[in-house]
Amino acid sequence: MASDKVVDYVEMEAEEGKPTGIKTKMSNLFWHGGSVYDAWFSCASNQVAQVLLTLPYSFSQLGMLSGLLFQLFYCLLGSWTAYLISTLYVEYRTRKEREKVDFRNHVIQWFEVLDGLLGRHWRNVGLAFNCTFLLFGSVIQLIACASNIYYINDNLDKRTWTYIFGACCATTVFIPSFHNYRIWSFLGLLMTTYTAWYLTVASLLHGQVEGVKHSGPTKMVLYFTGATNILYTFGGHAVTVEIMHAMWKPQKFKAIYLLATLYVLTLTLPSASAVYWAFGDMLLNHANAFSLLPRSPFRDMAVILMLIHQFITFGFACTPLYFVWEKAIGMHECKSLCKRAAARLPVVIPIWFLAIIFPFFGPINSTVGSLLVSFTVYIIPALAHIFTFKSSAARENAVEQPPKFVGRWIGAYTINMFVVGWVLVVGFGFGGWASLTNFIHQIDTFGLFTKCYQCPPPTLPPPTPPPRPPLSTSPPLRRSSTLATAFTALEFPSSFSCN
Image 1 (cartoon, one colour):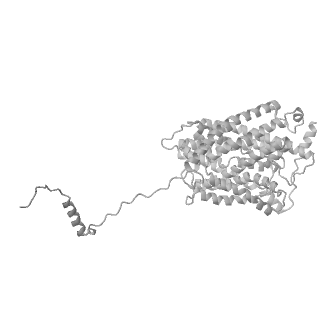
Image 2 (cartoon, rainbow, N blue to C red; image 1 turned 135 degrees about the vertical axis):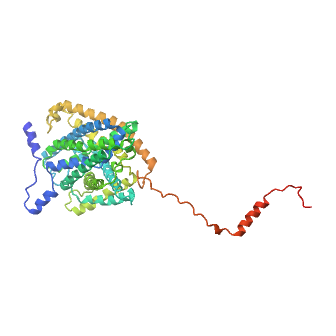
Image 3 (spheres, helix red, strand yellow; image 1 turned 90 degrees about the vertical axis):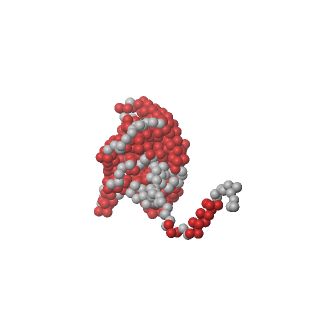
């Protein structure tokens, strides 16, 4: 029995054919990727996008110690649930390939895995949460683009920049699949690496501002808002299935994801700690770390690189939505790139519109984390793993057994129940309450469709004193009339007479 499992598992490892010409070699070098390195770059680049700029804001809400501990804790939880998703993907694909199903022109997605393993009700729930999360994940990237470019060019307000970058990000409809993100994911990780170390070094060189205070945590609302933003940080594996499907050897994904997450920690821990150390409670009113650092060529370079990276991350978040839409309208297996691109355009319109309605950079991350990420990448994968292998026959015939160091099936079930309980109570419960409270406060303070969220007030010129009239402008008639009026106002005694 064990040997059959291995054979079935290896059957899905067919690699691409060897390149035969210069054009094919160049395409494979820059465009068509499916190696473990591509997957590593994709995972690391996708996980630490614009949230890099909001983690100092979360530290100001949580305090230094809680910020560090939550990053380490959710790093472990995120890695575990990514492992669960990869295990369920392998189980689903192996079963389907035993039934001679061909996936060469079809991209497997998370909701299809749930459908094949657990039925249509699980599929519908997974599809609803995953699509909504990816929709708002794309919205967040547009908001981040507008927020960042404003610190280089404030001649236009952030809402106008959102219009412009919405049009730019719509060009991702021409990227067919995750196979074609090779050069983009490589460049994206270089950009976030530069930005993270710029934030760290610039904050240390700047030093602490005068009278800096590190009073967090001060309120329960702020504490759980910051915690759910970190939950969102390590919940970037909503596109796990699509990245795995783009790999030539998807069984290596688990180790790749863990290594990518560990690398992300080398970026997030130093940068968030350094910025919070330098500016302290000032970050409570500055969700974007760029807003507090003085302008310099190095900061402008970091802003530009993050803008390009957010375009890449927009594509990462939006491509699964493109696939769902293509399948819904019957265009998924179309060979024409232009036809598929035209069919994808309607997906961008609601993203564009929502970014203009809710431009709350920072608070929207926590809200999406508590209400959507908590279910999409934590609770649903843990429950799906429990129910898929609830019978002894399913556990015995599983393509992959849980690792020995976690206690095999008993240990895996225990961890899954802990993940469900923790995220449901702390992430969705307390985090949802805190994030919605903060989000509603932003709406009450700034309003929907606000033109420039958290922009500094315009500097008004000092008032000019009114001009002094020249002395020669008063005619003599007015002066005599004034004297006459004053004279007639005098009171004389009634006995006065002229004899």
